[in-house]
Image (cartoon, rainbow, N blue to C red):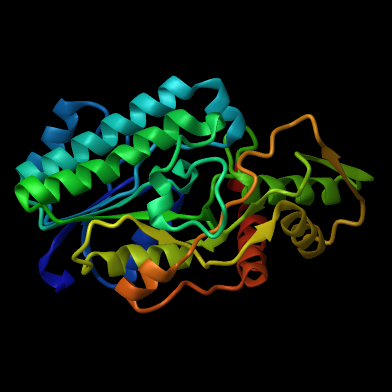
Length: 312
């Protein structure tokens, strides 16, 4: 697609993935608009209508959402469900109404059932309910996929849905109350090192495994998905499994923390295992994201240290 002739709407442009995506669009000299939630409440039909009426986008990259870690999802599951299902439904519906040429949206890898053999294929997504700790968020994001399928079938509307693995990288959310595992661990280990602490406590047993995807790889896939002619969903990851214990050891080493790691086994691990079969993505896109985890962690830690005074 010729981006030079298109107007692009980026929802969630001030968030983690959105900030990195907008930086890339700037480098590509793309004409885009990334409104803040203060300008437009994407759970409000009036605001979404006003947004599309004013901007008239050709392409919509839908990244907006209410996000958080296990603790936040357990505390406010209804909020996570309502906000995310309203945003996704309205953005897709108004994209159709305003004849948008393409929508690319991120669903959620935590929507996979809790107990599955790994690696996960996209067909596995529908075999059971997701983990109860994030069920509100996960089920709302699943709705995007159904909406993509049904709108393509009935209206011929073109959208593609990606299922990212655990994302990390510069501009992530490092707030310990709402962050995901990588930024939370980076912040904890750097604080422990700076305070000369003898030990650090980490949730769970460390045996759970995840797949970690660097944000630059995510951005590239979102841009590439604009030219994809299928709804998907497509797994978006590296196809490589890393245990939380291995992740903790890497971050401990990269932050030069010399103390002891204590595992709080009274806290939940979340899903026991999660990593992807990337065959479907590779067939459609021609590659598999491949940024090395240690390289990505090093760059993320460097960014955090350079911006630590600005982070709440």
